[in-house]
Amino acid sequence: MIQRFDTGPRMSEMTIHNGVAYLAGQANADLIAAPDIFYVALMAGPTFFTEDVRAQEASVGVPLGTAPWMQAITPQTDIPLAVAAARGTGATALKLYANLSPELVAKISAEAHRQGMQVWSHATIFPTRPSAAVAAGVDVISHSPYLVWEGVAKVPDDYRVRTFGDFMHIRPDAPAILALFATMHERGTILDATLWPFADEAQHHPQKVGAGIMPWSYAVTRLAHQHGVRVDAGSDSSGLPEPVHGAQLTALPLVHAEMAALVAHCGFTPMAAIQAATAVGAAALGQATQRGTITAGKRADLVVLAADPTRDIHNTTRIVFVVKGGRIHHARGT
Image (cartoon, rainbow, N blue to C red; front, side, top):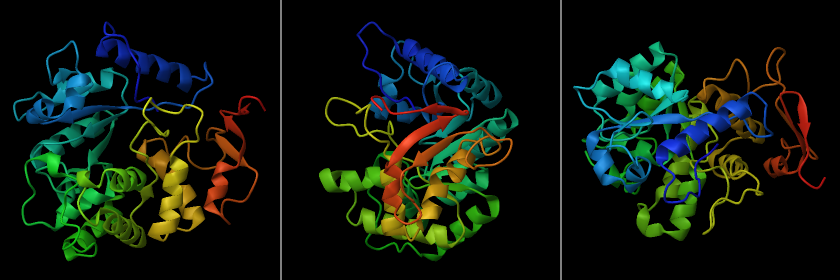
């Protein structure tokens, strides 16, 4: 996954985006030694682009909300054209972020699927609640803490309150949330829990999240798993530790920490956590027919370990070598 580039002042976001597309093409064709790369194009309501500095930084050189990888959507938008523009960037999925009505979420999801794209969304899209996103047909809803908004009478319009749910009074097993899990199980909607980044935020910047966010998030993820909802092991980041000066490119991916959290706090067996990072992760990407399990006819993508991870999930970090597309890759210096 590519998230961050250190660029000079003359390098436009168009150049950066084209670079991601180029790297994805090279990596996915096994022309360079790199993980396969799948990326999304974002869609949100117009107010998001004036409220979120990240959207502004990702749109340098073009009017806000008009970049094909970062589009503002209104009831007047030509949805088929907008989806086609996003698909033209090389993205294989859309990410629905904020400030979209349930009607727009449904229209975008239907058109994206017609054009062969996956649809990911925040669990709550503000003002669209999780159950409405699931009913609209999204494939994946992201961030367990945002499920808390299923239990409120009215979802706020402002997505900036997203981490400040009422974790102290809305129970993880509230009837509305359990009904949501039943629908997700029936429809096959995946929960991208992303526990680790919220735990990190709660520990280091507690003023940025609501009180009780992590016990609630662990409990609701456990319940989702118990009710048959498929949960993947997403990292919601570059996938690498990011101290002050950027991602540590030689560090192990944070997916290992996410798997450990699923086991330690959410009732997953080590095998279930591994499946969250492999089979369910592949399904979330729309790649289940090619990746995620050791099956005849699928790509030979393997991680060979020195110890049994089903006995201790932390053994997933004891990597001997990686096989990608049948080609063995050792760590540098080994």
